[in-house]
Length: 113
Length: 117
Image (tube, rainbow over the protein chains, first blue to last red):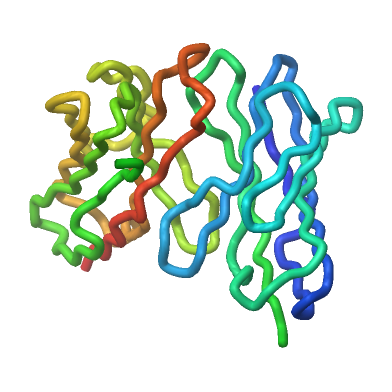
């Protein structure tokens, strides 16, 4: 079975400061990894994904995540956050040959002015 | 069109009511999903439809009844729900399933917030 662990349930951060959201996974087979963001009272939006190839993936709004197979991690980072980044962030995975998306518990990011 | 559209956005229903949630996508995706999300929790998978056939039912109570009339439409019929079924219901789609899922990941709708009174 696969599982995803997000190590921090809440991360308070000041505006323009960097942030890192930690995600570790467990799987005996190849997986695809995702980060989703959920703004208050909204659905989930895909931030970025790792399928194969370069282990560093970037999103259009300044987030990046690095796949580390040896540490089974897929941490999300942003060098400078904005108030608008306040949201819930979910790390998720699927088996490369599967169709079930398994989520971590989520990390709530609160950006303070 | 790169969206998954869910209607209604909000729904309040009594425990004896029958209602339906609707999900629509026009991206040509052949797999569609229902997820349930309780407050401050991650989404939990309920059902998966692959090529209009039910492929996964995560032991969901029979008061939830999914239906996939065609490749663009997914319904969730609700009957005799309990207050604990109040949640955000999310629909998602993917290009395919398994190795044919494609590189687009899962596209989620904005959800239907259901309150059972």
